[in-house]
Amino acid sequence: MVSQVQLVAVITTVFSALSFLAVALRLFARCFIMKAMGPDDYLIVLASLFSWAYAVVTIIAVRHALAGNLLLLTLKEQQTFLMGMYLASMFYPASQGFTKLSICWFYTRLGHVTLTRVCYGVIALVVAQTVGVVLSAALHCPPAKWFHSPVLLLLCAPHIEAFALASGTINVVTDVVTYVLPIPVIRILQMPFKQKAYVIIILALGVIPCIASIVRLAYNSNLMRFPPDYNTISATFYWTAVETNLSIVAASIPSFKAIATRYFPRAIGTDPSGSRSEQSGRPRPLESGSVDELYRLKPFRRRTRTLGLSVLYDRDRGGMGTSIPTLSQERIHVPETTTVTPK
Image (cartoon, rainbow, N blue to C red; front, side):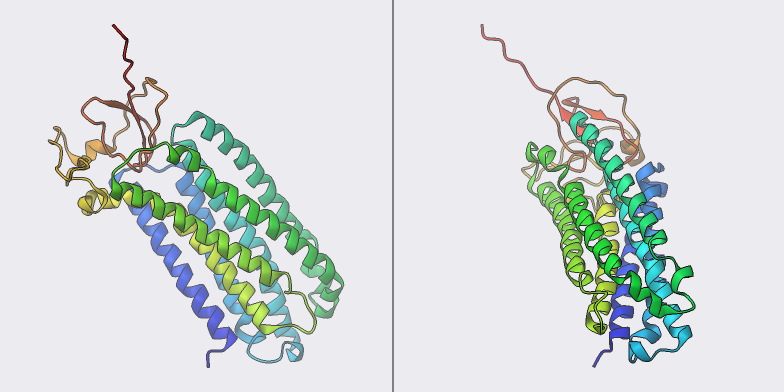
């Protein structure tokens, strides 16, 4: 039978490796294919560092604490476990905050004016939430109060539980807000089936971290119960790892389009040079220029109110639209409208 220590270690390690792979592919796409890094890329790197730091302190904390009776631990083992929980309580909101900031910053580069303004408001909200939660976790019950006598931590237990529930609820709300922001924009798009499936997959992946956040909140509500429940403690640890790492993966998925366009073009409905195939399945004639030219920024021209998402369209369609410049492959394509004047 798998012990709680092994369960936490395996789940945390697997999902940390998954997010590491996602970030590595994202940076490969940005640095070597598009040759441009944006603020959202730096933010997701910071989120990943905090997530992996959370994984390290979690595995160290549970290595001895959950292997036997938590009440019979030596002083050193108690200090190691509680210090791990203390650090994890700061690393988790920091990772989630940087991930949401990365996602919102990516949205601002999609070119939709209203979406951009809303994103700036959400960014301010996320910054305030992250700073407030991290500072509260750090200062509410610092190690100086309990490090030499861990039993004194019980004096903080009721307040810690209330704080965990409040911060967890706010986190779930901001998770949902962050992932539903682009839905009004996506609803107005007309796209080929493969590209529509691509967007649906991205949105579906964004739902998974929200579900993980809710499950984590349910376990976290019983974290400070006495006597301690080992299943609740371990579940809180590994569901937190699942949430943080899947959030990073979901935030990195759009950047994979550059890799798919370069190496697997037909899988996303493009021909080998990056031009979008017709819905009938017949490729359009290629325009002159290398594949790298497709990633260069285009001059901005405001011509229309019609909006399309660049994760769906790879190339201006023979002069039938304008491309809004961004630092990534996920550009907005704005097809021009035609005004018909009655004779």
